Image (cartoon, rainbow, N blue to C red; front, side):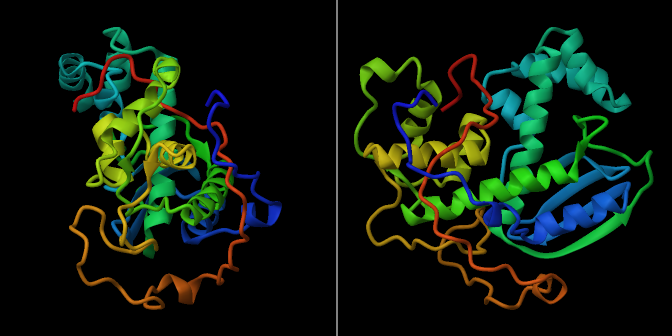
Length: 303
C-alpha cells in the first residue's frame, strides 16, 4: 500500500486479537501438545494442517491458492521450470532445492510464497467455517506436501496472525466485502497509479460481477486475504461495488466451489460449538488495511 487509498480500518483491539475461533483454538492446543501429524479440518470446504513437533510446516485448502498456484499464476515460476523441477525433485522430497538449483526462484522468494500459502490457508479455513477437526499422528517422519516450510512456524504466531486477519475481515463485511461477494469494477485506476499499484489494478480488472474473491485469488496467483484487502480498498476508493444490487451480504458456509443458491447448513449444527467455548461478538472496528505478505508478480498473470 502506498497510502493513496485506505479502507479506514483502525488497528484491531487487544480483545479482538485474543478472540480465538475454532481453527485458532485447535492450532494452539495441538501445537502445545507437540503433535507430529495432521489436523484434518472438515468445513466449507475445510482443509488440512501439517505439523511436525508442534510446528506448522504446511496447510492446504480448496478455499485459497497453495504454493504451486501462487508460483505459477503470479508468474514467479514458469510452467516449464516447474515441470522440470517437479520431475527431478518431488519424488525424493527435494522440489524446493530443485527450483532454487535451476534458478527458477531464489531461496528467500520461495520461502515467502510458502509462508504466505500457510497463513492464507489457515485464514481461509476459519473464514469459510469449521465443523470438526480430527488430529492424526504420523510421527516426525510422516509424509509432507511437496513444499513444506521447515522447521516450521509456531502455532502461537499463526494464531496471532489469524486473529488479526479475522478482525479485519469483520470490518470489511460492514462495507460489503465478504467471501461470497462478486465485486464489479465501476471506474479504472488513475493512470498515474497503474505502475505502483499493479496488484490493485490486476484485482480491479478481474472484478466483473461474476468472480468471488476466491476466484480472483486463483486466477492471479495471490492470497485470498490479499485479494479481499485490495477489494476493500478499491471499494472505499469508489472504484468498485463489492456486490451487485440485491446480492446477499452475509458470510455463509456454502462451498465456494459450488454455484450459489444451494441448501446451506443451519447455524448451531456444528459439532465444534459443543467442544469449544463460544466466541463473544466481535467489536465493530473502523476499517484499515495493514501490510501483509504479498506475492509480487514478475509478469502479467494469465487471464
